[in-house]
Image 1 (cartoon, rainbow, N blue to C red):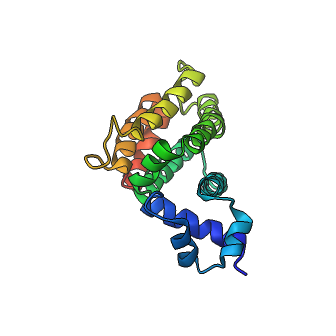
Image 2: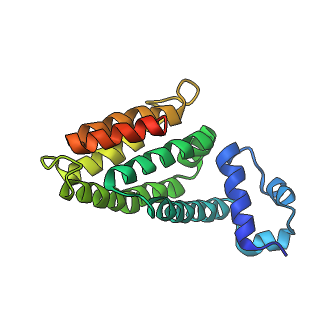
Length: 203
């Protein structure tokens, strides 16, 4: 029997890189090399599968973020590490995956937005607050407003009405938006560090 963790991991890879809607469940079962009864033991149908795989993906993102930030030396590095991670994730994701979620699985997409507005909100808020206290980010910024703007910019980036994926590479859009935003909230002290990181990592 294939372990559930393996099934979730493989489905995550297939759906995020190839999209959702052009895959039939029976084709996915065959591709995974699992028995139909093992698949049905995990998922009651396609929508249930998509919801659970997205939940798994969000949990994996949180785990990856913790590992990523573990060795960061300061809040500027933390923000830039998250920036790099966001660029990488968007470049690895097929735009069809995001569009399929928005069009065919609105409840699952809403779950993604709620995760963005809770987990991502408080993660960014905490990092920016620490950066202000330590003198890397400007003291005159409104923490809640700055964090909210960061998240709303992400919503704009993944909205095909603003950035059609056939015309814009989402990873590049993400990089362009956030690179200048990070510079804007930095003090001179933080700005020098940010420039070093940008140059060193070729962002």
